[in-house]
Image: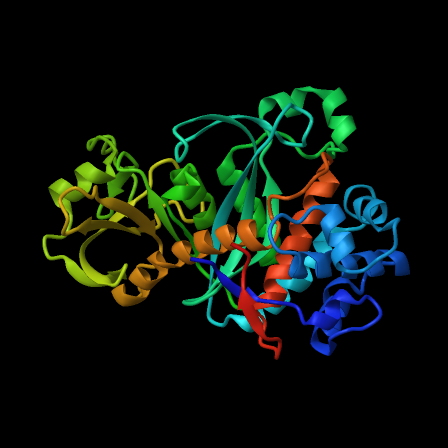
Length: 401
């Protein structure tokens, strides 16, 4: 079934006319660009993403907004070569998203673009569990502000493997900054949240990640704890934990407890009385049993702030025996269980948004190879999506199938 999204007004195809709320949006997000031609091409690129059905190629977008014969080259120049700062535009998108979605959580979405060759920035060989094989691909990590009904993209990071860290010739060709090197996924997530936290847009919001992100959950949780940020992270059954009651360092007379897996801990010492919650799925209600227990995470130095912090380990078990249990770790120990369980559903909205961005807003349609170009395109695609979700009077139409 086609995803419904907000279309641009027909007048937007004419670059000489402007829908008022659209023009206000472009001014708010891209008005900082120093040159008039940059602002004009930002407008044109955004119009193309909003009006062209199907694949958003540079040529199709230029044709759709009725520009001159030189428009394809100019649009390509704007995205791949023009030296404009994408961070300011993303900050503006984050401000709009935060104002649109109170209250919200922070979630992470990932996008994968299959590529040929080795020259597209960040492309590397990677095993993709969903495909069941190793693919040559680009992997983007996005930060979203997510309410109970919407998820809006506000920032992006591009994964690099060791090959990109060591190949200086390929880095120069793709214009990869010296500061960008190979790093694990959990540090990308931490960097994204650090940048958003620095904006001080709203009161702190919890970061919610599910198993699709496949981060090193223990390390990420430890660093979020040190930053005193709220989180709810799905962990692997083998995630090491310690019982919460032993919160002080052991004496020489009492040996340190050894960590055990989350699965073993909940099997042997978790709550015996589950919280039962009904989840709507495909028109049916399935019931989940959620067991809870207090734990600590091993790995933090005893003298570190937050090293003795108690976390809640949750085991989510379906009434269907074939479904394996899911495990979550959170520092939201004083929240009502209903609130925590509601947060567990937020990542699903983000995954649906990533799919819409790919299908209807050109997220995977970047034709260039450079690092700045990739970030420019991801910013424009995100801006088109955020505009489509803001409350204004534009009519709606089905997305292209």
